[in-house]
Image (tube, rainbow, N blue to C red; front, side, top):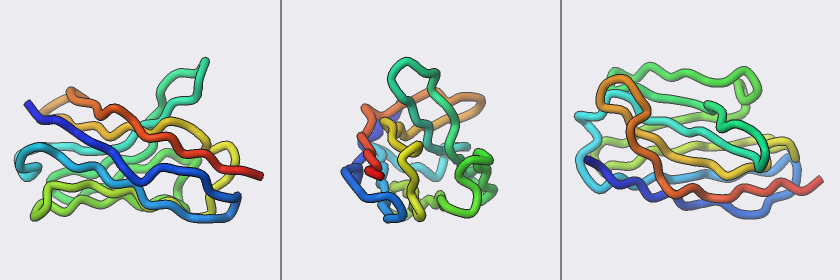
Length: 116
C-alpha cells in the first residue's frame, strides 16, 4: 500500500507554467506505473500522463508537447511539468500508482486553475 500526496497546484495565467509534485509514502521503485489524471466537475476523470518503472512515458493527445512527466525514485516523487497552460487545463489533478494493472492508488488531488 502507498499514500500519495500532491502539491504544486494553483492559479496561473494562460501561457504560464506549473510543476506538480507527488510524494509517495514508500519506495516507488517497485511501482510499475505512476501517473497523473485530471477531472473537471461534471466530467469523467481522464488520463493526462504516465511513466513506468522502465522509463516509458505516455501522454494524452491534448497535453503532448506541453506537459512532461518524470519520476525520481531516489526521493519517491513523481512530477508533472506543465507548460503553455490553457484555460481548458483547469481541473483537479490526481497522482496515481499501479503495482501491476491499475491505477490502484490515488492522491487527494490538487487544483489547477488557468485564467484567460
